[in-house]
Length: 169
Image (tube, rainbow, N blue to C red; front, side, top):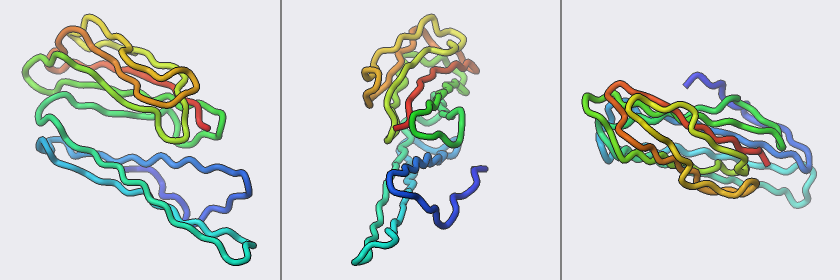
């Protein structure tokens, strides 16, 4: 939504890397169990190869709605492009649009492909949240799951955020 499409082809030289971040959204109000699948595909043609070499790869990302009228999670990254060796900062915002407090909140994410973990934090706590702990994280320079456990009950209309930083490989 709003991002420019990639060009039909990109020329890369030997050793070049290309990292593509695909975003897809589930509609607000989607019922529990609803699924959305986004497929990112790429085709490769290698110039000057004899015989000719080409390949096609695809990655499927499936989002399943697990709560109707519950916690709303949004994720944003601080920039659209990043060269190998640079950092990306992801911010996950959580919001309670409902009319009752929400408790037992654990936010989980993972380092994206072609990145390694650098750091994570509890950025801002929502109304009614008395604590936030980083309950799981990979070692610095590794890949894996990042999790934050929120203590207390997120009040109706309350929101907060957590962040993590990765290095592009």
